[in-house]
Image (cartoon, rainbow, N blue to C red; front, side, top):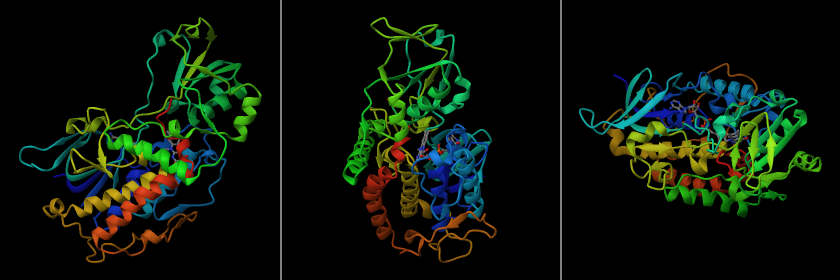
Length: 429
Ligand SMILES: Cc1cc2nc3c(=O)[nH]c(=O)nc-3n(C[C@H](O)[C@H](O)[C@H](O)COP(=O)(O)OP(=O)(O)OC[C@H]3O[C@@H](n4cnc5c(N)ncnc54)[C@H](O)[C@@H]3O)c2cc1C
């Protein structure tokens, strides 16, 4: 019988953080909790990022809890560097990850196992008392619908399958999107393409100065507010503006970073605007963002009429057994870390439901709150971090919750943005 106290879906930053904290508070890997991930290898969405997104070009990658990533070669693709780091993390902390396992649907069990959640996958069914959903957005790229799109004779790409600039050498390319991914694609494609056109729905707002905490707080608070209201989370970039870099200034000087409004239709030969002007194109790159990949949760009916999932912290208001981490305001590496921890604190404190199942005690007995010990032989370039929050903490859940709440309200609202992660959160245009 496949039954666990807690099931985590997704082994990206958010899922690994949750798994780390589950172990840390005493849930026994494989027996009490399990992580299911449908990707072929460790790395979450990072393993799929395009080859020219080198580690040095990643902004604000926050280390997973308990282990720093140090000394990585900034010229190596981030997919490799972070993939290896995640792999080392998983083995260091002996996290119970099964892959590839595709979760197809999560339902309320109504009959014999009433009270449990039924998790249906391509390899079988699991039952769980609590679910931490950490499925990110990468698997749900957003392609806007534009008349004529299917008749285009050239190639169309989305950020999720962007192959790097070489494919566009000598071509005429339209890049659609107002976020940092779009700008990154545009800048590197423009180095090799015959000509580029940059199209955004709204005029981009470039931001020259650095983020201060007030700006950061206001921006994330606006995303949080939408989630609280049960609306789909929007682009953080849409409320912060695009940070103007040296490379962008140079691109603007050579006439590349000149925005055109959204075209009205795609034709066989290119794109056309309402005033009749046109751009003949060989390729269109849609850097139009992502949506939360939560289709498998549909049978639970978590969505509000506004289309979003209303959360209280990380917990679904409609089904308190379900937590969403890496969703909305926690869709950044530091936000995912903290959401993973917050979800575990809540799951653990739901004593009533957990008591009915496994006690959640570490096989090694008492001391469930001790820091997780890495196994011997961890790769050298990864350093375990003696962070304050990894020290032995109070067993008092209220105290822990208070600390977590403070972190959610303050750290996630401020540090996230200061780290620059907002560049990349995917709901753009
Ligand atoms: C192009 C781009 C660049 C970014 N750069 C940065 C950056 O520099 N700094 C930063 O802080 N943030 C960045 N972000 C945001 C960042 O990716 C996220 O904040 C964070 O890494 C996401 O972690 P996650 O665990 O929520 O999701 P993911 O990393 O997407 O992990 C989700 C996991 O869930 C699995 N999964 C999904 N659906 C299922 C299913 N049905 N069944 C089983 N498994 C499933 C996937 O296989 C995947 O392994 C970037 C985002 C994008 C799109």
